[in-house]
Amino acid sequence: MDKANNYQMLLKQAQSLLKDEHDVIANMCNLSTLLYNNLPDVSYAGFYRYQNDELLFGPFQGPIACMHIALGKGVCGTAAASHKIQIVPDVHQFSGHIACDSDTNSEIVLPIMQDQKLIAVLDLDSKKFNRFDKTDATYLAQIGACIIN
View 1: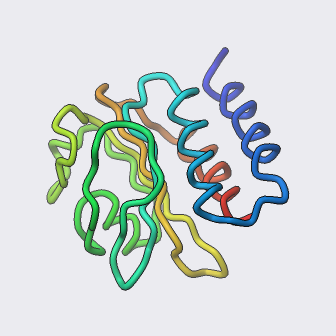
View 2: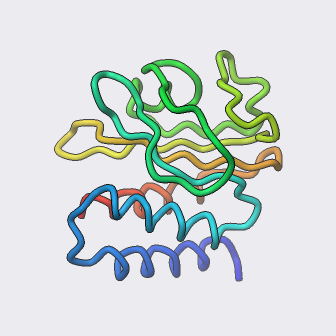
């Protein structure tokens, strides 16, 4: 199955799984599990919740991770501060990268917005370089938004 078809299936699964569920934490739990178990070459899938002017570690699947991230710091903090998707083909070349897992080589982080306010970021890591691209960004943005729908 090609990448776009796989994501279309995952989007439908996410929408069905979270239909009528309004607890954001529960939705984050199920989405991180869905993504981690169904995307090839993903070593971490999780959320950082925006609380008290920082990112606080949230539901995830994968190895241990950083618990607090300041806005503007690392890939997650940059996505949160800019409200823009960050696709990083080589995290070792990203100025200020926070190495929570030294095996990570590429990363994508997507801000999750509700009523034009940041509520979280969705973070996916890979041990492969250049793992993430615009197709990932397009579908992950839609899937990530399911936590608030």
